[in-house]
Image 1 (cartoon, rainbow, N blue to C red):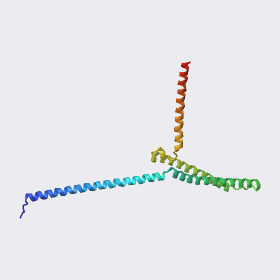
Image 2 (cartoon, helix red, strand yellow):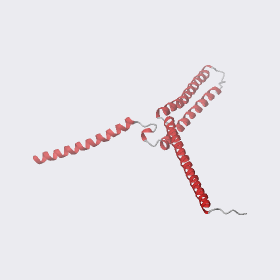
Image 3 (tube, one colour):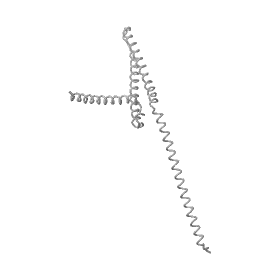
Image 4 (cartoon, helix red, strand yellow):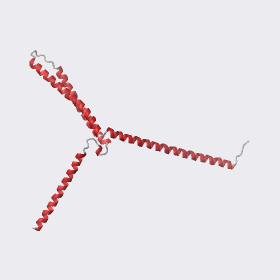
Length: 187
């Protein structure tokens, strides 16, 4: 037996379904907005932290310190190798002068020279890499000229002052020429 529903009951059920669907749409919209705002907040926070990290890592004083340590360490190796080579060269010359047996092994001299050459090339390549690394940092990570490594505010100020002085000299020359012209008219 089929039950017939009253049109009023069907209308109420239909309105309830519409209201529930609208509530679901509103809830989904709220969830989407909440996820979007939390995602933006996360990206802003991450971006801020990344900017702070970049400022720390590429601070001019920190870079200067690190470069000084790396290049200084390698330079000290070159100096040690040079000293060792010179000592072995002097030793070889003394043996050659004072030992008359004609047997003068050169392996220590060759070894110290190869060490000197190796340490010199290492210093050169590390300096080269550091130089281009700093250029890359300045070009791609530091948009503001004042933040770039190697920027010298005093030098920039001196250049501005020099330009102003040159402009001042030109204006003084023009003023002197005009005064000379006025003096010539009066005579």
